[in-house]
Image (cartoon, rainbow, N blue to C red; front, side, top):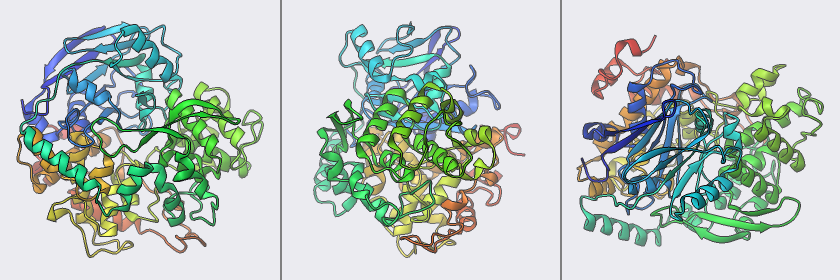
Length: 630
């Protein structure tokens, strides 16, 4: 087996209470790298189409990459993969912290779980074995309580735990899986899948090390990159190091990328108190900085002892997406309330992006008279009403009253409410979009529609570098120039190249921030130093295209028609804003989507991968004719 891999995959059948081990196929690893690449390769072959995502047949995977658990900068990520109950298609979510590192220390590249446990259970995974244990005593606890209880029960302070909270237990389709008391694989409804299996937690403890092909070269790359970070001209790098992502909030609002009032507005004229939610206003409450495993950036922070009407004892500093979702999206400038909502989400397992979208949807329905105070259990859902936001969130966690209507995201909520509420349910393919608007950077809009996980906040970064004529990596093929931001018909190849290249980085176990936004991150050199491979840009782009194509085929096999996934009108500037930094802008989404799909080898009109693309990527045997497209 190549260096960087453990060579073992764990399998668990919760219905039968059985576990077994399979060898990781090296050819598969070379073709799909790891992470959700490995995940989609396994699920596409082992899982039949049309299953209930909350049923026993859905496979929930915890996957790592070859850089996870190594000294490669930011090599600490893991992914949760499954069929998404939120979108009905491919689902994955990504998290940092130390859980992914622990899986590799224990000697596992991935853990796949199927079935439904007869009673609440948790997995204990060590160097030697996988055990299914009773978790009845943990059911109902929040994620902090669960982690503390398991650590005490197992008697190992270094055990790493990924668990679910009450929202996932109640199968909220906007819930995720939480590790390290607030790092969360939040998107695609992966928490609901874990809850449906009555799997409360996965606890991992190991003492091994990940083998590396060329340790001196890896050490050299790490040292040189840490030195480079100190001198990078990128303002984004400097902001992330000093503040974390909260340092981007003010700029995002002023520039117009941050949505205001459920995506109706943008700019500081629409949200004048933006400075309350950014930079020093946030880190004044930070008691300490922290880093995920092997990360020299250390963008994370802990806040605690927050007084006032919304006290918290200790919690993670809110990220930009959270500040945007609970702030301008809902016309709320109360930072203390946002920190409280963030803490509730971390403990219950709710995705802050989707929850913010749900709160904004409910507020707009209230404003338009579709939801009355009676409908909302007596809650006044006026814009920016902080007590109402907190009360409604509590109801969503507990699925009580109006909370039960809203707990599965805006698309399902609008179907339940009706009465024209659909026009205010802002989602792409069933998922609430991240807090970066395509009107500001069109590449975001392209990614929201074209990526197999629609509306995903982490997919658009590489494409926006093409919009901005920036470098994605220190390789000539990935340094872009000559483009205009609002140019629509010439960026397809460059955008697809950037997107496919990044698939290799994310599936290798790396964080998005240096991998995309810092410009000089040598992903291929790091992978080659760890694995002993000789990847170049062309090969990496081919691997990324293969990963994207199988994810797209997974969706189509589930009955999803890519041609019916659209950016909501207000996100595309229809009608255009009349004031602010994006006034008069309307995106030509037809051209953006057409060009991107064509560059990937997919039919530009339908979004279905072509026979030629499947042949070029070596996928004809996996994507058999009976599993293809109508």
